[in-house]
Length: 81
Image 1 (tube, one colour):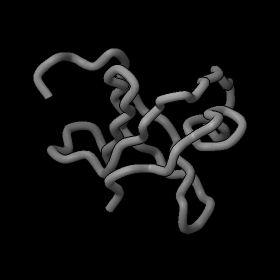
Image 2: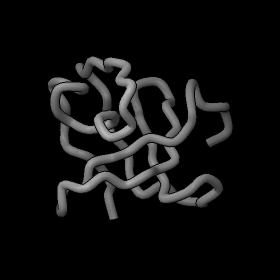
Image 3: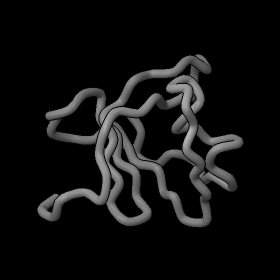
Image 4: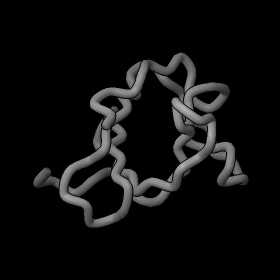
């Protein structure tokens, strides 16, 4: 990924398996949100296609970056490990 991201930072992503939240390093590039386990990892864990989604700022870190009220409609996560 040569060009700098539009935005980057840490977000909490809701787990599909356990419904808990994991802290992830994220980079927004256009309508693609890439996420890694930690900053500096070489390969992303996955990406979320934000086509047709809306994003709302939330004050609580436990209610951001998950499919539900914040991103709607939200497609499934792509390329997860």
